[in-house]
Amino acid sequence: MEHTSSNNQGSRFGNWLKTSITARMLMVGLLIVVLLIPLAYIKSLIAERAGRQQEVITEINEKWGEEVLIYGPILKVPYKTYVETTYTDQETKKVHTERKEKIKYGYFFPESLDIMGSVHPEPKSRGIYTTAVYQSESTLTGTFANLDFTEESVAAEDIVWDKARMIIKTSNLKGVNDEVAVNINANRYPFSSVYEGNKNQNNYYNPDFVQMHTLRSIALKEADSPKERSIRFSIDLNVNGSKQIRFIPIGKETTANLTSNWKTANFIGEFLPVNPDKITDEGFNAKWKVLDLNRPFAQQTFNYLPDLNEYASGVNFMIPVDEYQKSERSAKYGFLVIALTFLIFFLIQTLSKISIHPFQYLMIGLALTMFYTLLISISEHSSFLKAYLIAGVAVILLITLYSRSILKNIKFPMFILVSLSALYAFIFTIIQLESYALLVGSLGLFFILAIVMYVSRKIDWQNG
View 1 (cartoon, rainbow, N blue to C red):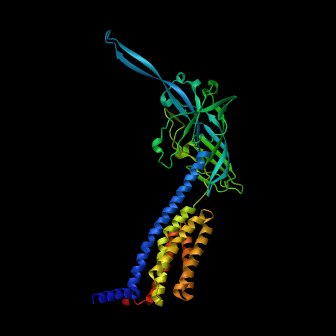
View 2: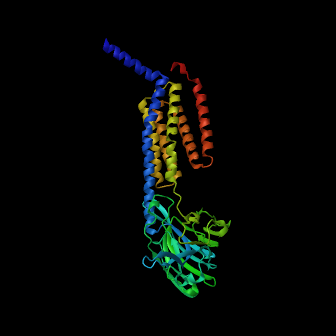
View 3: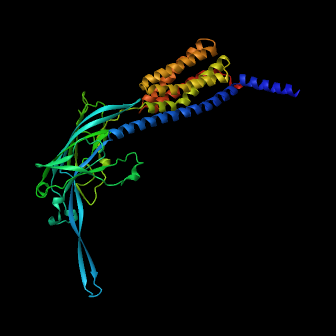
């Protein structure tokens, strides 16, 4: 009797699972939760592949040369200061004053600075990953005049003109191709690198941090220093680099002109080009003009050289690779795709009284998750659009053919084909949009909800 009772209870429970709308809803909800697990693994796979891409790009850039950031030229002029100390002789009780000399430095920016640069980018690939590197040829010309020591009350005879040097700070020493020297009048003063230790090691975890290195010229002849008159300088700087090229507008009047055959220029920084015709059919020809009134720092500083990287401007040459970003955004809609697809099958099952087994729901859900692995793997070798089309068509056909064997007729599978096509097209549209993504997504979901409410009005929920 007990065995018969157990069989009857199991039979009643099985019948409840088959006939109850509530049971089917619980089962579908549970399967959706279960399928969130492979979706989470897919998101981690996308992040892993994007991280691998960044590692390869960083390795290529390190070997070729990192970004080029030019800060200079700067005139470094030593001057004498004096410190007086007073002490009393214990034996004679006389008061003595001792005067000690101490050398300090003033750093002066150019009166005018003109930067002429030509950049020749080219793609570099390793495996399936590609980045942009370039060769740059720059000429820096300008003048130094009216060095103002009044801030420190320095007497004219205490300025050590014969020890003055020109310095340039740059982010990329590895990429320098030729000797760097400053030409003043008929004299040429070569630069050499200066080891300053690892002063900024605490900033390595800052993604915006740029390690700067110092190039220092030999001492200028007194006749080539702006002691009594202005001097004009010229510096050629040829550097291999990657990512971007930038300059800091330290001249009282800074003008810059960068040209390149790169057609997808992205101008970055504190100041943008002033010419409206900067983008051409052959590439770009960008011009900047920055006055000292446009930026919040003076033309000279004493005893230290400030960090002015935040005021740099220039051009970014990174190849816009957003396949992983788009794949990640697609995966974020995975829950919505699975839930809406299961809802379609649930409504078909409920309205047509066709039985769909939980295992069949699970197979459909796994097919939906396979879309994302196909998408990321194909997009690594092709464009995102082609990858989305191939993955979408493959998954939609697979589910349509599978539903044909479940639903026994052609009407419902064709409805599923149209519904899934519209759903994937809707998701693709949202991914492509930026400013209107939220608006379009909200209107689309509202439209879907209205359709579901209209279709489900005929379901007798009281008997579920």
